[in-house]
Length: 80
Image (cartoon, rainbow, N blue to C red):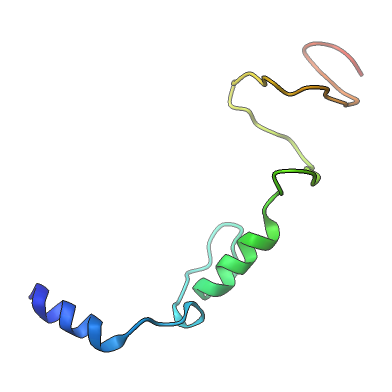
């Protein structure tokens, strides 16, 4: 059975990512793999620069080695 599967796969070749179906879920709306990759690339936050909006859930983890943090509200440590 494995040999038959390998033979069948070899006969197909490598499909283009745009022809492979993706089931849209969560925040990914694309219905093909290439579209999903493009969507993820366009929506990711760059390692340098970029702007985040909304709440950032650190999962009770500390923030360390952050340098200078500029903000307008800090609840438990006061500041406003």
